[in-house]
Image 1 (cartoon, rainbow, N blue to C red):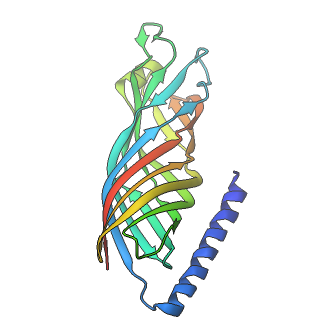
Image 2 (cartoon, rainbow, N blue to C red; image 1 turned 90 degrees about the vertical axis):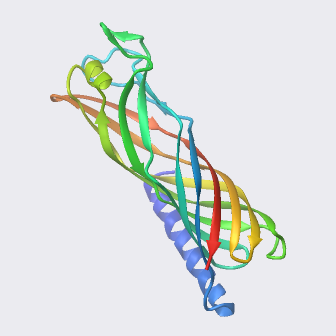
Image 3 (spheres, rainbow, N blue to C red; image 1 turned 30 degrees about the vertical axis):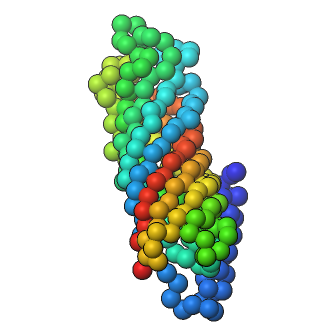
Length: 234
């Protein structure tokens, strides 16, 4: 899905949400709001192009490890079956590790922590809840868009050694589709429990600048997210 397609999808998502809000307003002028908090466990199925640039041997690659962070969300009920979810997490520190040759000359590489970055990644989802409000337990499906901005990008001592000196890291922003499937359980009129599993497409171009020597790669993070949370409606 290219950028133009994502923009068109975003417009369609907002248009559908606005239509549902109007439909809800016809029956209820104050649709309920909900705040959720819980665990955000990210499992990366990451892949990357081999690093290219001066002095980069063949087969030089990267990998990342799974992380956990705090999940927060604001949910707006549109109708009995639809809601709009704005999900965020406390920006997790994601670490990048070398993958490929054991050493670069006399410098260890494979499995060495090379760099780290935090990422702010709000996700907007339009969810459809099955069954009706008489059921305490309801499955749901959702689809939407995910935006990622990387910051606090740092090269470690191991990364600097592998690159041949102090290195500055940049990562491009990402915009991609997101989907989710989950279960909601109503404990009380104002309290609920939730569990979901989702996928987002996150791709970024990484550039490493070592005193003007530029090396690049493209990383597909492909995060899968397990979310367990509780919510309060008001």
